[in-house]
Length: 352
Image (cartoon, rainbow, N blue to C red; front, top):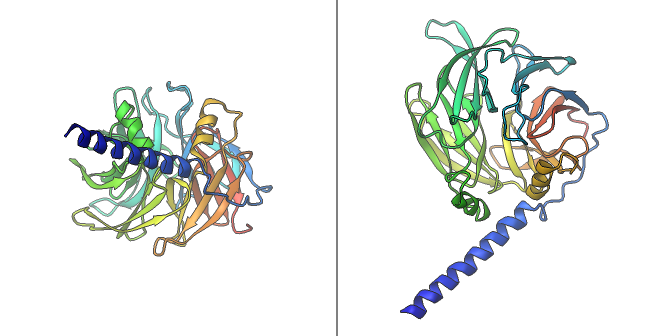
């Protein structure tokens, strides 16, 4: 019996080593060799440290940027939500004037709809990570992009939120990137690429988990009519597609598409395609986290959500922007933000 137990443990150990080798090889970017695009015409727009998420409002013509300094792990006075007109790089301004002192914004989502009385509404949903725990802040959005805080939401299913998509004036989905968090089990979860990430839903009163089985759930978004929801698996390098029941908010996974990139935030373009930026090499990204001078290769792709076919729309050695976390299509421009860099890169789109 003792030999049997040792044999089983040996097999488990070998399988674990093989699994770690597979995950590490993919994460290293050894299997990805994107051809760099011509980025000479791209222009950096200085915002604030950590332009992690960028979303565009076609009604106001403004791009909203979530910025937070992440290297130190401490609160930074320039943390906040900024807006700018992509046609006017000098128009950058802070709009989260009434944000709490411990504001540390992460993923954001702009929702437009109507109130029960038929009045037009615009809401910005913002994930924040104060010392006290994870939160979602909901803001009313004025015509000029100014934000007014309406409410702060926390619930048990909001375990480790990364990105968010609003689907109503108070309703939203959010990804939980990991299950175990910053613990020894969390490191094992990452190195084994275990699919323990999830998606939570908040109905305006209560929150619950509505989907599981994502290896480091990261970006999330929804199509124009709300019938499909998309989520990215950063470690799994997979795009997950779900059918969404608008009445119950339940999700039914219909597709898993492999994309050779550490997928981050998801933006839906005017053509219905998905624009996703991410890490070519996780290890170069981690080196850049420790040393701002260390370059992290950059890539962004356009994905057809019906077929999973993808095309590189931006690729760079890291000189123009390091390992971008978001790519937002705005007409004939592409806006790229990053976890640590302090600028949004505005590039011509369609010339590559």
